[in-house]
Length: 157
Image 1: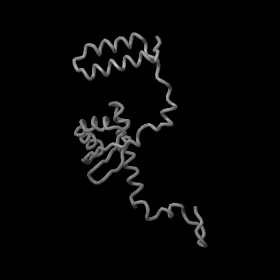
Image 2: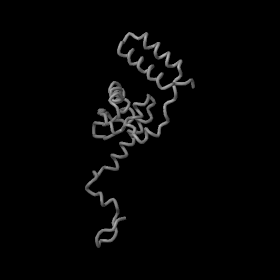
Image 3: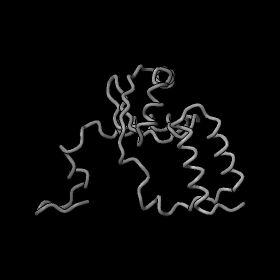
Image 4: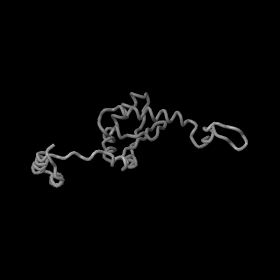
């Protein structure tokens, strides 16, 4: 409850009257239902990174933190639209966008444990794989990775 000037108490929700859409609660419930749909898909981290942004009459707008995840999701867009239609009984066009703000916050990333040391054997296998690749760019990248892992002083776990 909130006190208005000389009018006694009034519900706090009245402060937001006119600011939020009339169907805000219904929209929020729909968004949560669609979010649960994506969270329960067990096909990898891309689905776990999906954030439902908006549900319209014929459109479901989702955002992902990385363009790589968004590209992967776009490749499976048709199957997802079909699964959504089966689950919720209506066809929705899936609109996929990226939002870097959804990335892991820096403060949270700093709390993550440091990477485990890589064994010398693992480093040698990466270097060996790099030498056998036909793609020169990928080969160079893997060689640099093996070198950088060696510079960290990787110890046998």
